[in-house]
Length: 253
Image (cartoon, rainbow, N blue to C red; front, side, top):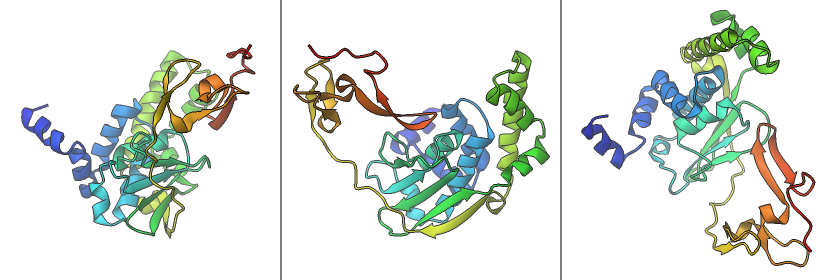
């Protein structure tokens, strides 16, 4: 990367994304998304396209959001490849508190600016698979064997990656309306992320946000890990874990 580009990105780290969004350059967005997603696939490509579509329907100042003030929000409804396309293109991430995850299992995303009451929800049309089958008919049979049944050979795994890439770049050539439906909505959005203090857990000695503690029996407030119960987002969605049931914790003496 040239020194000039480095200096430009120091000032505006999302400059390349903003330019691509304004030009609706889906290929550049998909390539940048793959840097964090790790590979090319239809899911992340659909997240890219849904974001380009949704952002194009919002006010132009939504592109200037850098996540610091949490003005632009993305409400994502699935924790799958689609989500990485949304995070990369929109700049709304878990880390900057601009990504809201609702465990609904739908390939849909709502974009809204805190400066506006109304947002836009973009949802995937059910027949999108027919488009992929037309362009890359090998993709879904390979996905069924390699991913769903976990029975693919090394050669089939390699071919699956190749066909996934072909399918991803095929998807971004379609007009938005061929892939998605959109609607204006007034979404329920949370308050800005609270500014909280920290404390040291008396059990493990690690620093923890005060709002992420609870009492365990008669003991003082401690972190969720030491208290034995916590929630995590994994491939199943939002899941509550009882660490004691899994043998990770012993009962206090």
